[in-house]
View (cartoon, rainbow, N blue to C red):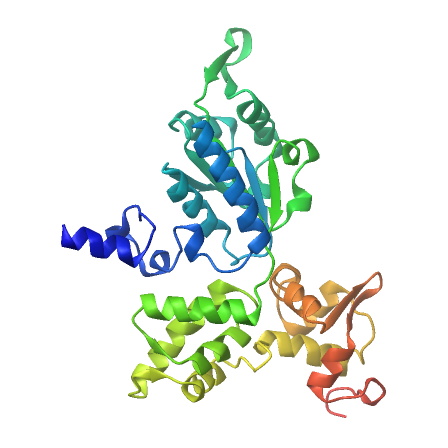
Length: 344
């Protein structure tokens, strides 16, 4: 039929439940050929998927780590689509007790993928039940309490556990060792993000010039999720201004409203750098002291802002505390010996 041929020519992917997908999900690539970046991880996953298909077996267990917004959830759905199996999505904080885990595992079908996000937040008492589930595909559950307590062994289908974590160091060594593949997602380059922005704009039916795409890419902190959020805001900004095309100038104006500069630094990033330069005169400063000075929670600084600032060379984490790196002084247009207190 002509309609089917047009659909297959548009993309080699077979999208699952595509008509029910939200705008965010529509931007997720569903096959390897549409995924941009993370070349090493994609190569490893292609090998595992190809071998599993030839054997007619489930994928081996996989652990994805790295900062938020880099595509761990996207890869889970991509793998499910490539393998032609269902993906069951949950998160570590939701699994509070062994019964919760048993319910998830017993509802899986053969070769299904169980995707657990923020896996490091699973309670240790529950984590131990995963050992037998991953290795022997069975789980022992205690029934009743006291003298009537007994253990019942539940046999599980051969499934794939796909774990995702932003803090792999918090996972126990026995759990990490049970994953066949442990791979880390890194921040994307500007060129990769530009390609992602152009692809997302096309899917959202937004007319984006290459200059506008590069402007968004350079301010997205190496993160596709941020890039897609900036596209949405730039689209809204352009509509309000009566513009039908997202040029470099329009995108620049839109991101200026968000107070995101050409280096990708947002308002809180710049406040952190200014406080360290002026109030603490560039001296090493403890995380709690810094968080009080900028009016933000320590976890927000250490998990959201610090990784980008350190990787881009603005901040150094020393045994004495946080300290400005040479690039920060250049951005602030200050010299380390010229720093002053606020108001003086």
